[in-house]
Amino acid sequence: MTILVTGGAGYIGSHFVCLALSKGMKLVILDNFDNSSAQVLKAIADVTGVAPDFVEGDVRDKALLTRVMTEKQVESVVHFAGHKAVGESTQNPLKYYDNNVYGSVVLLQAMAECGVRKLVFSSSATVYGVPEFNPYTEDHRKKPFNPYGQSKSMVEDIMEDACRADPGLAMMALRYFNPIGAHPSGKLGEDPKGIPNNLMPYITKVAVGELKSLGVFGDDYDTVDGTGVRDYIHVMDLAEGHIRALEYLSAHSGYEAVNLGAGHGYSVLQVIQAFESVNGVAIPYDVKPRRDGDLAAYWADASKALRLLNWKTRLTIDDMVRDSWVWQSENPGGYGA
Ligand code: WQD
Image (cartoon, rainbow, N blue to C red; front, side, top):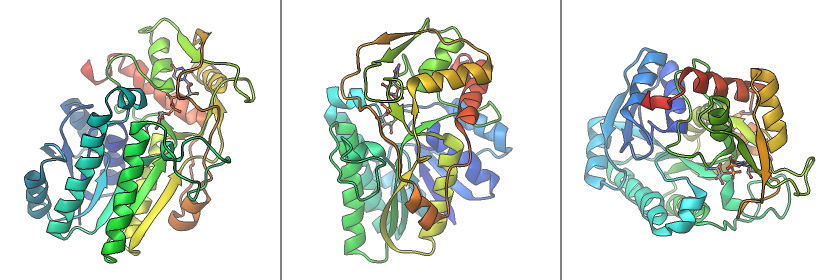
């Protein structure tokens, strides 16, 4: 049973690949290196002792997809490939609808042509939009307010419609909260190109001296200390959630959306404090104005993941900040070094 892992050289995808290979699962990665590099494949081989089967290509290339699915006898797909920068999506929505939505449609068409019936999709809590209540449950209404979140929500709806039309399909959208951390080996981690958008890679670049200080986007929210609160989840816990989803789909058909989060939130200052105390590295910061589009606080109701997948997070915020630092301090230049 070969798994096709699109975007398997990316941050989340590569951690899933490492875990799946360490469990003896058979997989092939498809990646166009848009937001990753061949160095990641080397790192996966270092960590697992297995050089992953790899095809360089784009999910929008249907001929390539059907060739890979046939030749590799693919039976399921884990679909990570997609653009994921909220700000960029607002500037360039068509880039997101082309790659994230059209790319997923082509993937689903190729799956239909090749009789591949199981799909795990990398979705996001951004699909919910402004919380009507916290924590978000999966039946919270979806009202994304940026093209990135909209693209994820559209793909979820397309998957649901496909499953309604063909009851033999088995598909699951995993709604990620805030993935951070890195593989405990220190050989894999988050390596965003340019100035990081997200909190943790920014913190680690300050810690390693590449950036001078962290800008904290607003300290006047209605939260424990005025700074934004998010549900951070260790990328290895997230990877495990995908393994459980594949197991679930081998025994159930139809479409499900499932939150993958810890079920509680930490503020920006609490993350900084955890990072400083666990790693013994000071993180200078200054408070800046709120960032456009930021929400004050949201976190997951993770009870459906426990009920359906027998999954919940095991790793703590201390594990997340420690593993993030081990990766960055041992790889100051990321994969580019
Ligand atoms: C977290 C908190 C910021 C940077 C986004 C996407 C989401 C998912 C994860 C893809 C917020 C604060 C951040 C900084 C800061 N991506 N912050 N200074 O915005 O919750 O979620 O990334 O799936 O879909 O929306 O993550 O890490 O950018 O921000 O103060 O330099 O840290 O205001 O409160 P976010 P983030």
